[in-house]
Amino acid sequence: MQPRASQIATQVAAMAMSFAVGLLLGPRLCAPPPAEVEAPAPCPEPDTRIVERCPEEPPPEVEKPAPAKPVKPSRAKTVKRDPPLPESPPPTTAEDRQRLLAWARDQSISLQGCTRDPGTTYRLSVTLTLDEARSINNVSLNAGPDTLDEGLRRCLETRIADWTLPDDLAPAHRRLVFGLTL
Image (tube, rainbow, N blue to C red; front, side):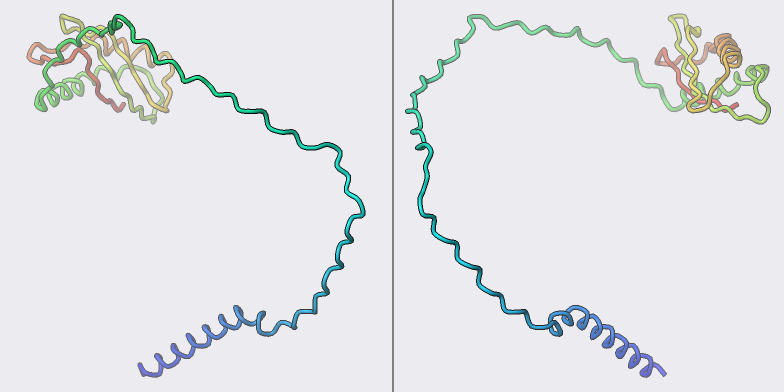
């Protein structure tokens, strides 16, 4: 049964190729011969030539003096340098990061009292700025494309600002960023 199928496939392919060749070459081979083209009538020679004015001669080229060499300044200008950057704090270890996130998760229970739309999930990015004493100095919330009404925003910021960092956690940076889902 297999040879019969290959014969049919070969015949179909040959027929498709001959059809394609016919489409490509048919208009060229079956087109009527081109009609004889008559030679165009020769243009008559003009009797007189009229020249209104002769072309002007180009002006003579003027030699340009060579550009003067730049004068070197007598004194180099001082470059204003920026002050050196302060030493960066040591990086937060993975263990400290996990402890800080666990602390934030434990503190997030206090946010349950803020009134919000039932059934709505809020995904927030929270940025805490700490002062020298490691207490929370500033709270910034970013809800992304979702919008928080002003009352909910104030309630969340006030409650987060009341959080206290435990003594055993000593973040290397004064700025903590984490995400919350309410």
